Image (cartoon, rainbow, N blue to C red; front, side, top):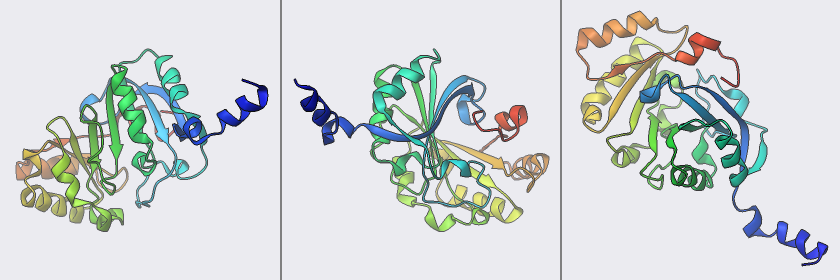
Amino acid sequence: MSGNDARVASTTPAAVAERLRITEVFHSIQGEADAIGWRTVFVRLTGCPLRCVWCDTEYSFYGGNWHAIDDILAEVASYAAHHVCVTGGEPLAQKRCLILLQKLCDAGYEVSLETSGALDVSAVDPRVRKVMDLKAPDSGESGRNLWSNLDHLLPHDQLKIVIASRRDYDWARAMLAEHALAERCMVLFSPVHGAVLPRELAEWIIADRLPVRFQMQLHKLLWNDAAGH
C-alpha cells in the first residue's frame, strides 16, 4: 500500500468507527455501589444531556479527546486492575460506548456502567453491572427518567437514588413501593453532600425499615471533589 493509500484507509468510516470522546482515564478506589473499596480503572466519557442540580462532574460535559477504543483498552490494561468503571457525564450518550463495554467484558474485567437512567439500557452487554440512577425531584431532572429501563435491570445491577431533601426521600420511598424496586436489584440511597446529613438519611431508612443500602461516596471522603479520583 502506498503512503497515500494508507492515509486514505486511516480516515475511512471503518477506521474511525470505534472511537470515543474521553474526558479522563484514571486509576483509583471505587467509592460507590457494590464494588466500593476495590481498586478500579475509571473511563470517563465526555458529554451528558442532563443537568442535575447537584452534579459533581460538570467538567465532563464538554471537551475531551478522541481515543480509539483499542487504545483505551491498552491504557486500562496498564493499571493491572480487575475492576473497570465506565462513567461520565452520561456514557451512553456516545453510542460506541456499547462496543467499549463489550470489549472490556471480553477481556475478562469486572465491568460496571454508571448511567443516568434517562437513556435506553436495553442494549448494554448483560455481563456489565449497571449502576443506574433514578432522578429524584430535587435533581431538576426527574422528568427525564426512562421508566422502561426498570424492565432491563438484572439481579446483579444496582439502582441509585441521590437524595437532596426530605421531599426526595419521600418520593424515593414511594417509588420503591410502587415499582417493587428492591425485588429487581440492589437499591442504593445516597445523600447529597451539604444538602442532607448522612446520619439523617440513615435514620429515615432505619425508621421506615426500607430494604435499601445506604451509601456515602468514599472517594469524596478521601479526596474531596478532586478530578481524577
